[in-house]
Image 1 (cartoon, helix red, strand yellow):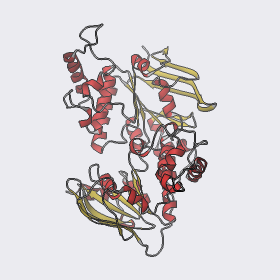
Image 2: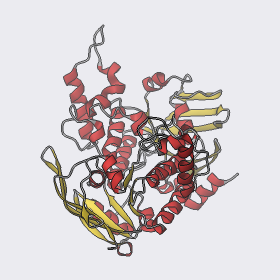
Image 3: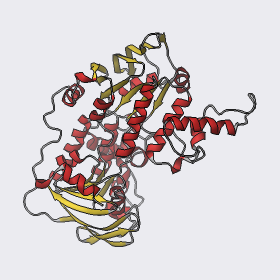
Length: 502
């Protein structure tokens, strides 16, 4: 038996006459991990969707164990031993662990009757979750599990179908550092069992650490492939974007002279969430917010924007007190909030780019006693702001947001708030899950906003990102402020130490 499990050759795919894959070729051996990297829109997801049976190829050949295969749906792919674990997990939170694992192949008491054999179901589910070191009861509802354990349920689900090849698409974007390490341990165990892995990630350090081989896609073509030792982060970035990037962060000229306070927070507390939070944010300033998962960063952002309550304290926007639980009042006073969950909370995935962009501004864009809306004017406004931040789509009024790459989806979330010309922008993980080139574009947009006089509260899990973008950094831990650091005193170890201090 050959050691080669998967061979892809001459793969081509077009959408509406526009080529998105051009003669893509990949090889993957048994028990090996292939890292697949590239900018958003480079063709990674299209290639994997063809392997996973979600899309049909136009031409080319996919061989599994030496035999040509062409799955037409995900069920076909699973029957062949190909499992695809998407970035957005396909689990039902209201169902139990065992029900999610065996959802499409419940063991039956009688072959021809629709009665589930619960004892067999529990036994098989227990064996599946033991393979991935998941220490929960099979009857536990998935909604009670943290994100890292939900990821393990997805892997157990794949193993229950005897998967030979598992595709991971951005598996660590919502995981803590500890959960990420646990996932890497599981991947190492799967490899030792002879299961092959395709690992897609924008975190290039993880790719270099985990993978045996790496392939780089750009504009639908493989532009580099080979053993991990042939690559460095610098070479990967150059191959991905087609040019050398001298800086990961664009230059920004700091606003000179004292600036007016845009946002003032004093003694804001909510039991079990945040405690005695106080800080000022000035116009023309980027205030970074650092901290570990569970430190209260995102919860603070939601409180500031009026989405969640607080029991004590005061929030002032340019000297005007902001009432609690009043997002509309926050918007009227020039605040904007970019959520960390762009797919679940930030976008209407089936709606057009235009509809998404104009949604927060419908009141301002209406006119007359009956608040009429002019569709052509709305489309023009959406097109203007989309062009301003370089959303890569032509027909903004006809293109559904779900068809865009992650980077372009993030730009749409930003665009819908830019249309309101906010003076205070709260950004929660604005570059999560997007590639290095798209990150640079987002950084430039942030710098342009600040250069125009806006104030930015920038929440990020990546310390290097905050060091590269912020004027000051506020470190949080266990719902409290652990310290403030100015640009001259930025130091990774010091910032981490403040976050870890008990």
